[in-house]
Length: 74
Image 1 (tube, rainbow, N blue to C red):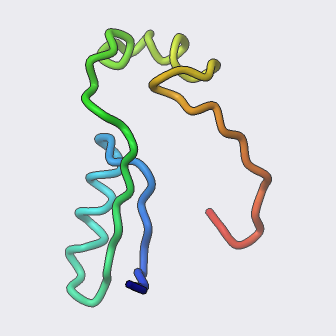
Image 2 (cartoon, rainbow, N blue to C red; image 1 turned 90 degrees about the vertical axis):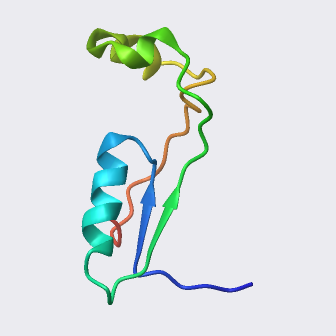
């Protein structure tokens, strides 16, 4: 099955869901939301200072992937 989308939003967190909603309000746009995460049971997800415990390491909340800059992406 091949499908094209106008926008692909990676991550269905609070910002990703809002962005996808806003983009989809224009009926001419097709939007795909990708989310790999499970339930947000990790204690650090629910506290702002927990960000420092999740992001710098590879764990079940952060896959730890790094990418190269791309001139064609935002």
